[in-house]
Amino acid sequence: MNNSSTAVPQAREALNKFKYEVANEIGVPLKQGYNGDLTSAQAGYVGGYMVKKMIEAQERQMAGK
Image (cartoon, rainbow, N blue to C red; front, side, top):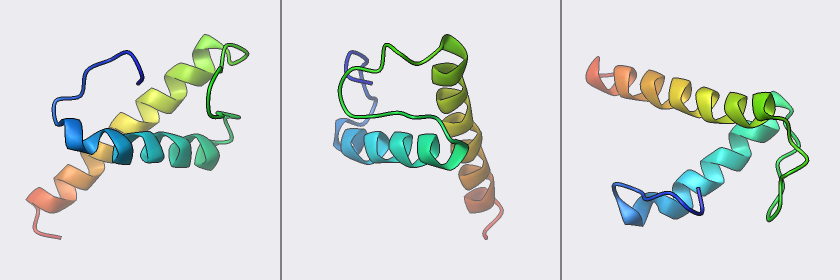
């Protein structure tokens, strides 16, 4: 996320924390700094799982839960 833009700049820190929480939850050894030792599949899995969790949270919010 270091090189990408964030639609809401104030959310950058929270998204970064969320990324590490998700990586830990799914067992991907993501660390601060260089992560070139991760496979493309591992990195993609973290991003995909983040999106899945954000969609689920939004659906719950929209459903009033």
